Length: 525
Image (cartoon, rainbow, N blue to C red):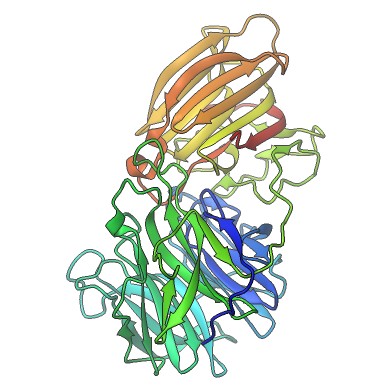
């Protein structure tokens, strides 16, 4: 067990991955770090990132980018893919995760982390969720969580269990072992287990307490792989449960450890940043902390013990190209950051039918259904932001709509859309709360207007809506629309907000399309 020598340090800002990037898992191969996060009902699934310094990350692919790998039909926003773990062993990358909507726990493999990745190997008998894979002495082991095998006494009475995994057949073999049920008395939801062999000990790192304000990271160790795990007397090793709901960073938990080539240790974990009150619209984000070892146990952010907005590390910064603020849709493929809800229909969109435009086909499905609607989005990553687009679309009847939306789930979103109301072309703003639409504002579009420029500007929880017909002079449509309903605290679930372009024929058939010339997203502060 080695602590890095103290050398010239550089600072970094938390979160290292702002926005809806929960349940991070990290591994190192040589000088490179790789990281994956959960995606739930969004497709493609499990983005994978590469970094040289644990701070500057570049997305290099999506692990689950084919329908044969990922079935999300009918999945709720907070169903689908839970808690992936990424590991590397003897030239092969392994990503193991749970599809809670279809099939359960599975593994995919790749020799190149950018892909392609294999089709899934579903693991028979792997009950529960949050799997990980561990390699030791020439063998592989499956590790996961499941309801307590002695009988569930209360909601969340689960346990961490282990069984050997035959990599040739991808089947579980041998006996099953219960390793640990968590550090607290009557602990709830021991989850996100990760196992490490460090010197003479096996270390079992888990989260417990649920994924809300009582979330925490705890650790146990044993000299035997299959038994005798004893919790750290200083558990939890990191939590913000004692800091109150008004603290700027809450819900801290679900962590993974990694050692840099220079010997320094780090921990990635999820946490939320409420704003405008106790509202976490950004969802659960990925944070970084330094780790030192004392008396055979990890100490997180030595001397502070909590996550901070800024941290230090002894790794030389290696900047990467930042995510584009503008997408002009000039490529024949969407960028890696774009997502769909559930598996996209084959004829959902086109980048080639009209070069330089993203064409969305109007489909009967709406954003309120647990189906694939005509919707393309990316994650909200800032509390204060601008999102804008140039849209060419003229509805031919009262069912046809298209525009921009900020969405938390199918029951909670806010949108600005072009529509036809009583034979009048209009632009309107609506909020959807608990599945019910409320009209906030509506303006009439006069004359022959086929191209509209639409802009959202958020300052905290207040969202302003604008439009322009020339791309230069913008007019206010709705002001200070409250978006606190788009938070986890109101809407529930495990996801954060996404922003994107949509179209719909609202339950009817249509041959109409909506063309988007470009999309802009970024912080203005």
